[in-house]
Length: 631
Image (cartoon, rainbow, N blue to C red; front, side, top):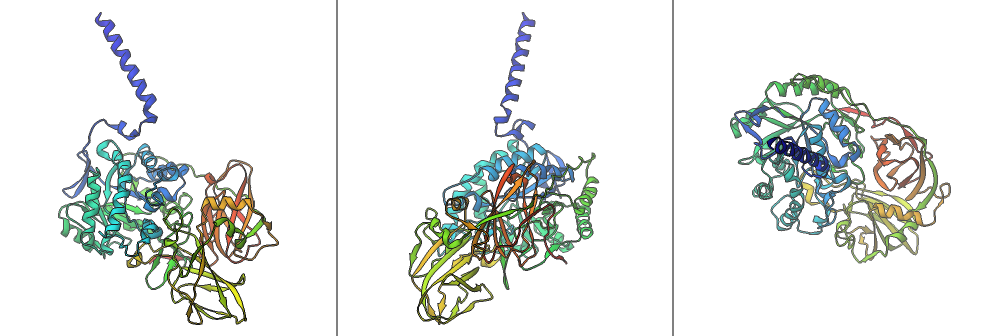
């Protein structure tokens, strides 16, 4: 009888085990299978980190899910693991997750839960940096542009409008990540409070607001702040571990950390492995031996470190940021960053030298580095047809009519959220000609047309144009491009785009505009297929859409589009916005992931501002431009 009971009990246990295994793919907390029940999280005491009572040195690397195709997340994480790192750090981009106020997107390439699950599967801990501000060379530092519809908005403060928007965002974001915390069986071991606030420090109550917002919504893991040497004194706060960001080690920084928080572990939250590029500059590189030497020095001091960036990825679409101190500089599409992994996830000498260094920190041999993803060349893209922007305006609907110019964010479009990215066209009627003046009210760059003919460009530096005197009335068009909002510095509140004030002809402000919103989203790019195009040889002058075919006859692989011979514009592949190009340089090729392609004919659509190039080629290696070493 007892034997029979034992048999039945054993059978029941087997059935339960089978059920768990079958249901596992459908359960959200896959990481929790590593240990049932609550666990003691990351502690920062006695000069070191510990996890479950065991000492832990954080060897981290930054890469951002929104800069990498989802199909490649695991590949990049496996390469991180094989380099000897144990922790992934990632920002969360609010402006992608809430593109319209109250409408949230956590699907596809924005599936943050899936990203965290993949990190857990690979065996990486996670430091989450949810903002709301993230900097990151990302448009408006990750903040949604619809915040700027409020003329009194004060970003990164306890201004009522910003607080309410942040609370609503955290109400959606944080419930999606709390279950991925270490204490709940997930990979998140720490969460950062805002980002480099000490360099901004406009509101003494703001950081406490963000900290409380995180805690109230269930964040229980170790909290961190992150600041550079100029901001750490203002950015640190009681009860939160302060960390430091730098590229060159300064012993005084470690001493200062010890002075403000006693016997706490030291962590370099951002060790800058390279640097970002901007249009009109050079491609920045940072010496590999100098980098390895600094990382080695950090480790010798017993500190933890996070490599920013380990893998940069791409500023797809219109999402690049900008800096504006002495002059406005928009970041390029590539976020290669001269990181240990290239923009396309390939190995560099930095990767292998770091791997050698980190292998000495490991009790067991590292996993072999995964094989590289194949790079392909598909030859020439056959350019077939073109379409003038003026002929495409019919697809934008009725223009908004206004006596005064209206900035992009305050246009009555997108369900009352305004326009976030792309171009805005302002159209009015002038009499005669004379001196056209912007007086700094064009943000960021505009091409001016009279009777359909281009008369030149205006921007921050070039603010005036001469329009030929012709008696009679003529149509004036001002095509303004948002080249990217500032992501760092005190100008962040002054990032409205388009015409942000009056422009003048003969010192008289222009009036009575028709305004067209040209955000060039996927719906618009798809819709232009439905109207009449011309042969490409008949319509080459910009602003013009040009379309061609890229033929893939075998398994799609990563490639690059060479934009040599083109002037300035945007490339779309099968309706997706690949990013901007500009012959100003330094970047000359655009990275095209194989996951964006399919077998057969792939449609390449180019919006060219000036004149269609003679050819377009797919090549198997990047050209990021002339090189400048970072000192």
